[in-house]
Amino acid sequence: MQPTTKNMNTRKQHKIIAVTPAGRKKYMEILSKYILKDISIDEWHLWDNCRDTNDRNYINSLAKQHKKIKIVQEEGVDGSNRSISKFYKNTRDADVFYIRIDDDIVYLPDNFGLLLYSKAVEEKEKYSWWSPVVINNAICTYLLYAKNIIDTNANLTAQATSAIGWGSPVFAAMLHHLFLKSYDSTNLEKWKINDKFELFLQRFSVNTIGFFGDYSKELGDKFCPVDVDEEEYISAKLPILTGKPGRLIGDILVAHFSFYTQETFLLKKTDILQNYARIAGINHYRFSYKNKNNKLIRHIKHLIWYDGMYSLNQICNIYPMEKKITMKLYEER
Image (cartoon, rainbow, N blue to C red):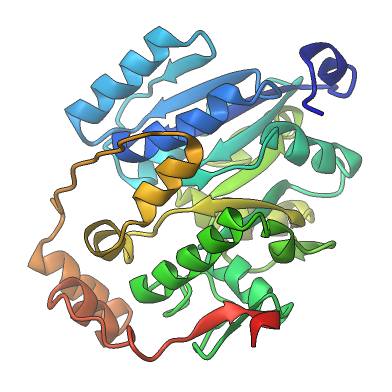
């Protein structure tokens, strides 16, 4: 039975506000379907970190159509991940549970806001933030592997920037296809873990995390200082400073489309985004994509910092692992 506004309010002690560093239209079209229909989410704040004028026009148009949406702007943002930290000063209302959601989250379960909030409020004073299991998040992928939910011969590691779980577009495509297959066969229960996990002393991709406004208010700029890498700071340093780890909720699932290491391949060589649009209820979904950041110096930088697989994927358009990786649900072996 779907919750009504009346019985939901009796279960909520806080407002629920989703916040999204926004935003790319091709992804926001999908995410908006979930956020706008979720009556447990009271407001949706779009942090204007757009790089493209067309994307900015889209989020402004979306806000004009829906009272639930508010555009938040800050000085000196440039569309980079580094700019996101400038927006956290807007998450300090004491009566609010905030859910920070990437713009390319392409699947959320029904009543996601209430699901995550209900888990968090039970242990409010113990943790800094709460995350669902995110499909296409390297740490979550390792968890699914360690818990015998997915079976793969890929060399996964428990690192946020794992060469496979974060860096391989071929692996990401296989993971998405397996998840979508389970969705279409109403078999998502197999992906859920009836447990919770502490995250501490490590970087974690904060694709979707919830936190309480009174905690952010109490810490002020120490919750997320301006001009830091918000992901590194909130996932790794904040728990160290406060003694409160992050919390991973095993039985809530969301899907994250891509990291920049995966995006070109997934958009140009697969129909995965179209399938997520389909299950979100979008008919005849179309998008345009231009790889504007395809600059040699950028690729050389990442070649130096990571490994040769990046240059093969991004520069040469070669995907040598495409035929080597296998993946299936564990019990399908």
